[in-house]
Length: 573
Image (cartoon, rainbow, N blue to C red; front, side):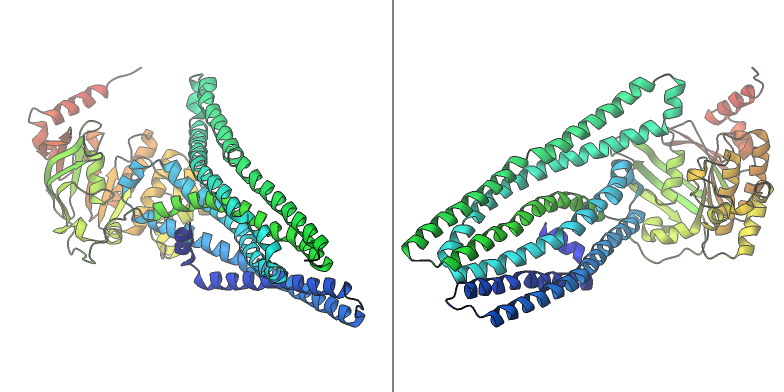
């Protein structure tokens, strides 16, 4: 836990130092009045109490109380600033790190688990650390100072009180081990609940349409019940050990009282000292109880913090060099690739695409078309062979350089819950208003946005759920136009559109691909007849390569697909 916390503290060392100093000072100010309380008791039990001296002690204790209140106010502010600064920095670092991870990371891990790390695990750190670390440190300082006072007064009585600590620590360690074990199960159950709930909400339309509401809710209900049971176990199983610690405290306090009574009867202890121990002895255990409870909470927090740091330490894509290609031709040289190191997706794929020309990728589902575009964008990295842009292997270029060279328009468009204007601006954040409007006009976004009450300032909703598929596609193309990258990757943007929207999108794409190097995944072969070259894939291998005219004259997969689509064009219901 200490290692994890120290790593986290590096994000805001000045705030951490300030908070720790204030905690130390506050702990001292809480304990010092105890020393004056001892002096007051001694004075009251003296043969002739000095009232002036007693009032002096009271005034000093009052001043110390006011100082303590002032310092406590400062400490609360400093502690919260430290906590929320650390958690903010953790989230920012996570966000920046996630951008640097390869797509393989996201395929190997559940996206819901990654979201839980960034949101819930950081929130666990934020809430527990913010509410326990101050109390824990204050309790530690107060316990040490009170122990010193008691040892000075009477070391025998003090040792009896402090003898509870080793036994208590053993019980706390047992509770600690159980918290770690059950805490991991609790987090797994929490993540499973989140995943099942998200699945249920996202698929509610299909669940209803197939009449599966009850059966699908059963899986969510089971996840919720498992989470309930895990929550109860996390709280209840360590409980008996913590209760045992509280019993130890009571027993050793009674042992101290018994010894004190014996020594008082035998004349080995003054009445004032016994009264002081009766008052302070119980106060000694109060911060220990805080330490006991907060330590257990911190151990649970450490599980969450460990998950955060584990994700932060997932290796990012190698940065590569700052080399920028002077040309934008694309070539694959004997490329092999698989997502799981078992089932090959691409096998010995080779082709070359000259600058400012169009290559169409054709083939059945699962043939490797989308994988080729992902390798060009370096979302994944080839297992063998080389993917080159302008003669430079993409592995030798930084991901940021590659992203600047490429614009993508996919069939499934994702829009952020923002305005149409800002979603277009996402293509190039430093673009002027004139450039954004020009891109919107070329992509025919203005045609439908001006019919909306707020025009380009209309919000699109999460994922663009307030717009039609054709409207989202035009915004996506406007983004790509604004970015003006030399390489365009198209994943059949018109595949699921009605004829009217298809015409609009085709016209917008014609504007987008002018003077660009274009790779298009084609499902409708009629849309790629003018491509400079067509690559026909099946089971990850290149079957045919050539122009539409050349391929249509040869018997093969392309011609069969063409004939099927021509035949399907005459179907009617």
